[in-house]
Length: 312
Image 1 (cartoon, rainbow, N blue to C red):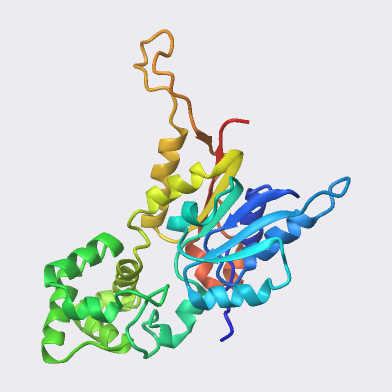
Image 2 (tube, rainbow, N blue to C red):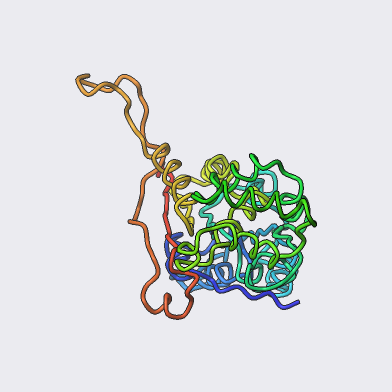
């Protein structure tokens, strides 16, 4: 199967890592390998006398992505393809990193491949599993209590019509199991007011919430970011692309914690707590330029944040 992914903020993200020959980097959500390929090219650019290229770990939890990455980078000893979740990067990689990048959210391949069950536009089994293992979205909507469904919609999508949608799902499954994407999309559409149906596709938030619940994308995200930060060498950088307010809020909380310094009361003449910032923010958040927005509509909500580890 061909794996296609439209890489978002490609040049901006790779540039943020300050790639150099001899460096060690992690692409923690490698997908189709767009960021990895450019990172490798930048590491190979001549800079004075010839130097060691370095190494890139291309990691993804999706077996389709892993197969595509292995085919794309076959014969490239500077790239090691790993199958796994970046939440477990410290168990898969033992050496310190000069940089790590994450492109959060679902890939174009996952959204556009109907049988993966991520899209409410195409009829398919209601799946949504990035790793293709574990509990499916169909299992969630057909087995969870109404209160749990309502909470998933609140927590993972801030869906204001969560009570109506959860009730509609429970009523529908009492008559017959909800097995396909279009079945669920129709149930949600009937559950929300007509005005809401005119604003945007009424099932968008429900599908996003179920995707998060299936894949645990937000559960433990902050801990995973802190773990990746801990894997960096002094001066190393962590670049993260987010696509919605929940993801971005998690990155901002981690940034705040790592960049916090002295906690002494302001009236203390000197610092006695001894706490210093563990990181700095080397650049403002970056969003796609007009050309990328026209080329790839899915990039419209993307935001790149970068952290640099202190110590150099």
